[in-house]
Image 1 (cartoon, rainbow, N blue to C red):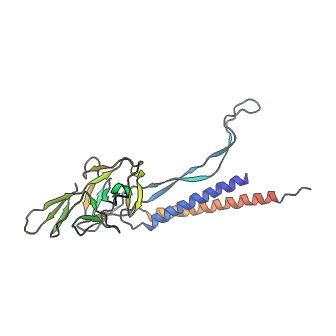
Image 2: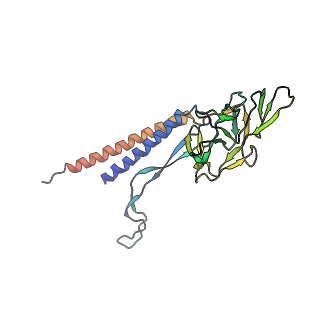
Image 3: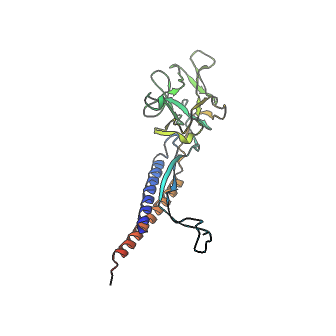
Length: 269
C-alpha cells in the first residue's frame, strides 16, 4: 500500500500548494481597498474499501467497522470571506463606503458579465462628463449614472444614497442623483474579476437593485472607504500551519519511498 501513500501525499502537496497561493494573494492585497480575502476549503477523495462496514465475519456476526483507506485530499472550493472591512476616514467628498451588505454596480464592456460588475470599492472620481467612476485602473462608471455639475461647490451624499450638489448662487443644494446598492441571494457565488469587481453567476442568483437602508441594504457613509478585511496575523498563522502540513506530507512521501526501497531490496535465499 506504499503506492497509495505516495499518491495520497502527492494530493496533499498539490492542495496545500494551492492554499499557499490563496494565502499569498490575501497578504498581497492586505492594503487593497474593499478587498475580500479568500479561504481554501478541503475535502477528502474516494476510499478503497478492503472490508465493508457491517460485513459478516466467520461467526456470521456483523463487523462493527470495516477497513477503508482514503486516497488523499483536494481543494473543494475557495470561499470569499464577505466580512466587512473596517471603515477608513478619508474626508473625500466623493469617497463612500457601504455600512452593511450590498455592492455598487458599475458599467463594464458588454462582453464582460453582460456589461455589469459589482464592487465594494467606493473610491470615486469624476470622468470627463462629470459622472462618478470608481478609482480602479479602468475607471468604470457607477450605475445608475450620477452626474455632478462641474461648477459644484459642495457635494453631499446622504445615508440613503441621495447625492446633492450646491451650485454657485444657490442657497440650497440640488439633487443630482442617487447611489443604489445591489444584493445577491448568494454573494459567495460571485465570480471574482479582479480590481475588486465581481460578476453575477448562476450560483450567485440574480441581482436585486435597492436603495440604501431599504430591505436590508447597507447605508452609505460619505468620506469613508472600506479597508481590506485581510488580517495579516491570521494569514501568517495559516501560512505556518500550511507549511508544517506540507512538510508532513513530504515526510509521508519519504517514508513510503523507504518502504518501497526495503521491499525492492529483499532477496531470496
